Length: 185
Image (tube, rainbow, N blue to C red; front, side, top):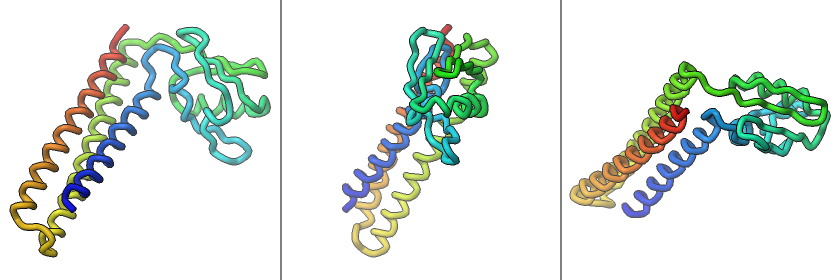
């Protein structure tokens, strides 16, 4: 029972790390990467649709993204959505494809991005702590219902804290790697 709960908790914590890494893929580092715009929501016939479902996104050059929509009529909406996404990108289109030059990051913009990274890492840590709190609550409930003993509760709390510490460390490592990638010139 305790092991099942800890396994479930570990799965939830793993999903938090995966979400953080996915979030960081969309942060600009000065190089063209399709992940920068894949999740931009485009108004497509009244429905908010992720850009990656509407077009082929490629990076033919290190400083250029190329977006080929499946439906050429959606180019204006794609342009608008990228501008509204506040990514600091200026798309241009020729009626068939959208080109997005990726400007080099200024020192000030790099520092702003590092602040964003730190904020998102902190949000992930809060999420991990919330997961820990929920699991602790379940463990105490098990003890109150006499399903586990006080000693088992203590051991489970220790195991839970070790698990939380490990995932918190991993979160910090992911954040540090992204900061280094952003600050790299």
